[in-house]
Image (cartoon, rainbow, N blue to C red):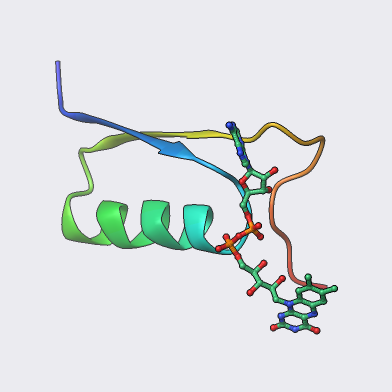
Length: 43
Ligand SMILES: Cc1cc2nc3c(=O)[nH]c(=O)nc-3n(C[C@H](O)[C@H](O)[C@H](O)COP(=O)(O)OP(=O)(O)OC[C@H]3O[C@@H](n4cnc5c(N)ncnc54)[C@H](O)[C@@H]3O)c2cc1C
């Protein structure tokens, strides 16, 4: 079982942190927990 990273918040910072973590360690399991209905998006 690999390493896990749980990120609280799916606004701008959360997905950025997840992407950077995966770039540094592609085998990392990342989970983003967002309390709202939507995660960050860029139109
Ligand atoms: C009125 C307004 C207008 C803005 N306009 C612009 C603009 O035009 N252009 C621009 O570049 N920036 C703009 N900003 C700034 C931009 O919104 C912020 O800089 C950016 O959203 C910060 O991102 P963040 O991920 O740090 O925080 P947030 O975007 O606040 O994301 C945090 C997330 O964490 C979630 N969360 C909080 N607590 C929990 C919990 N306990 N469990 C799970 N999830 C949780 C929240 O639901 C939220 O989705 C604006 C800000 C405001 C207030």
